Image (tube, rainbow, N blue to C red; front, side, top):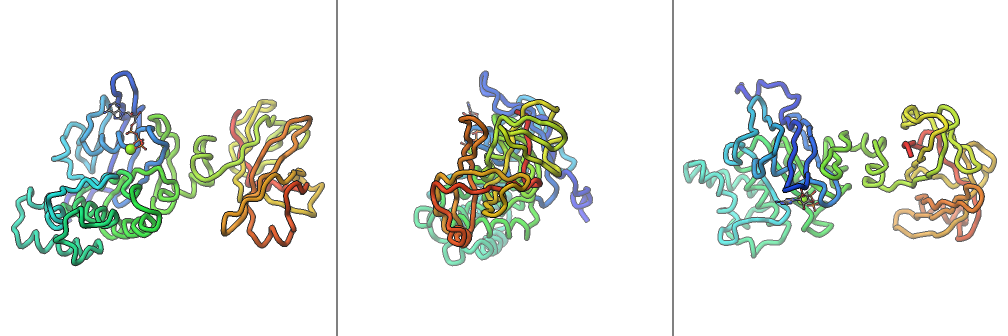
Length: 370
Ligand SMILES: Nc1ncnc2c1ncn2[C@@H]1O[C@H](COP(=O)(O)OP(=O)(O)OP(=O)(O)O)[C@@H](O)[C@H]1O
Ligand SMILES: [Mg+2]
């Protein structure tokens, strides 16, 4: 067993306290995270939040102002990219246009001075592995976007990198190809067991592909967790609305543990939902995802039920999104959304302007400090 394989799995890639400024603009603010060997970590966040900069720092393409990057027991903080053994795939294909697919894939192997026969064998295996068999002699301009990204991926993994870095590798592709390739990349990544950091601003991509997600906002890491944790327990309203849809009901006041006054209504909140951190009599924001807002025609008077008026009904294929106007006392109304299966909409005869009881399950409500 090699020395590398002996290292304990936990924290194979360790990124510590990275700070990076461009002039007076602080692009990364004390960013730290770890990735276990073989993990796929997705970095998710809005445009300009620092995702590419973070990836470039890990790659050694950008020098951090402070902080460290470790892989295994090696401190790579001051190494150039050529000494880090990372593979990179960028958003724009970045293939050499004057080289064929084969030659592009072989590029890194040639610089490692492998024998020609060995390079040929490796390239053949990679073409096969990434579904490019028969296309090796084509130039990038003769390949589709999806095929070009397969070449870029093959080139990146050809050198058996310790870390694979993917910067929005699928964003230039159309929706169908994207969905297919993300599955292929994930399977390949798991087969190779290569520790991977994938930047995306596509939440669905992150939720479906990643072992863990890092959510960034304005140069800071704001939450880290499994896709399930991030979706079910978003740490801040920003994370909640960035990943999936979230309804917010502001101007809530905490009465007691798990009891909130919203206008003239009382809503109960149970479970792991952020309520413990809110001081009594202080302002709070209640949040609930559209798929958890229930329309229940016969449940008037029950706890956590408020009557609302149907504002709009929007067809979304598999379901309908129903806009609801929630009266919160006086003239205050808040607009929320509920996702309902088509079948239920027709069974309940739901139509615009109808006034219906809406149920907020106690274990589905979350609370944030106002
Ligand atoms: N070389 C540079 N010089 C000056 N500012 C830069 C440089 N590179 C990045 N920035 C700035 O740093 C911030 C973060 O950029 P970065 O490219 O990391 O964002 P991003 O999260 O990858 O965004 P996107 O989703 O649009 O790709 C941006 O405000 C950007 O303008
Ligand atoms: Mg970017």
